[in-house]
Length: 445
Image 1: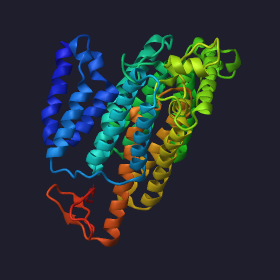
Image 2: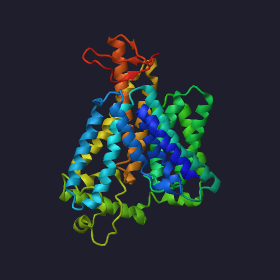
Image 3: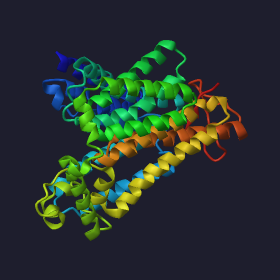
């Protein structure tokens, strides 16, 4: 019965997408982050639901009246350069059967990142996308938080099987990145019930993160919450709420959890930590001999690469670091592009904050820029211990900050030098002398 219900929901999305292509971005995000098909037990769990929604979105976009030209932004250009580079390194792979599936998956993620930038062109659409992400991942935050409280923190919290976030560490990182988005929606909402609901969701998500028993996530949530306090408009409230939530979770968690977290300092004696360090050395060895291109996708699982560059007697495993993962697979050039995207996103988040400062109509953009920066800090810290360099939520955040930056600059140019003109949808369209059609729109006051 559950499979039939989930299949019905997915198929209902398709006709809606054909009329409103931007809903395809919402549906794709819902499927990517909540993985509703993974909650079924039968036929729907093997459906290519993301491909169905993705194809419907692209077809609808082509035949719709939506602008077809992607907005030009530095972050989007960097993503396209990254797409070209990973395609080149995959072409050089010594085992295409091993590397091609990851290339295919990554290209789909990056392609839909560009589709997001092409279709999410208003503030309303952007906030709607953030709501979809928060509700999708927040479902596992709330579910995991309740589970942790009910079981006294004795068991690990896991994500949906067969997804990007199935592992406890991967789920923890996704939840760390989601909390700032929850906080953004909480700051924007004028409805008390929604604010309280998001506050409870944040608290439960913190419990869920602790319940994953991920040591990397502990470091990430400390860094993320500390930066969240610094970037919040109401710092005293954010500090008090963060401290209370963390203290409550720390007091609640059992001694076994504390003992596991204490091994962070004793990494020399921890077999898992030592295994990760050996894989980092493996990545450096690959890059030493292939500094430009690396070993291509899945290099760490490639027997040919292992035979050449892995120290004898060391058990091969995942790289457990987005930085060493990228270095080992795509060389120093790939790592430089990857870091440029991350640093560039943080820069444009800061620029958005500066541009929006002092404008009451752009408070939302200032808050969003701040919270995206907080989320990126969580990703950067947690990612140091996880191999999720191709995580779709991260690239979605890149698209969101690029869209926000474009909307802010459009709004400011509109106010400074142009006369607003009402469109059929009741929104302000930005018309420049050299452009005949609007590219981005901003809400009227």
